[in-house]
Length: 96
Picture 1: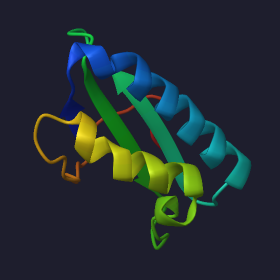
Picture 2: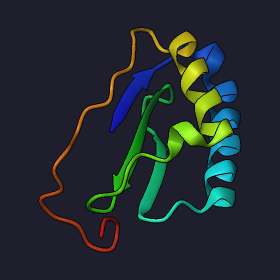
Picture 3: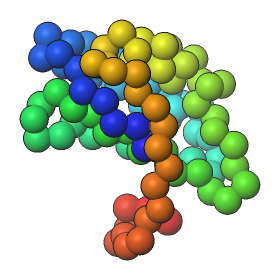
Picture 4: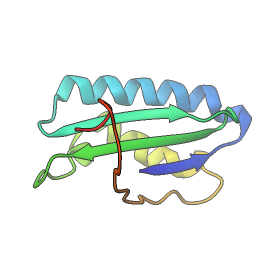
């Protein structure tokens, strides 16, 4: 999981970049990977979720659109975004 906030002026650019990245991930169809990006209620905080199957490696660095998003994210975020692992303790259909 990565959570970051951006200035209101950057929101449309971030949303466009997320759409481009999501299309790149969908085109690559990486096995054992689930990805979602969400915008929180404040309208300028984003939550990026990556689920990997056991033993799978992160495919995002090998997907050009995802790599470009990660590089640009630093400029959008108010502070450096860092991945934070989470443990799913309950889910219905959202996580495997």
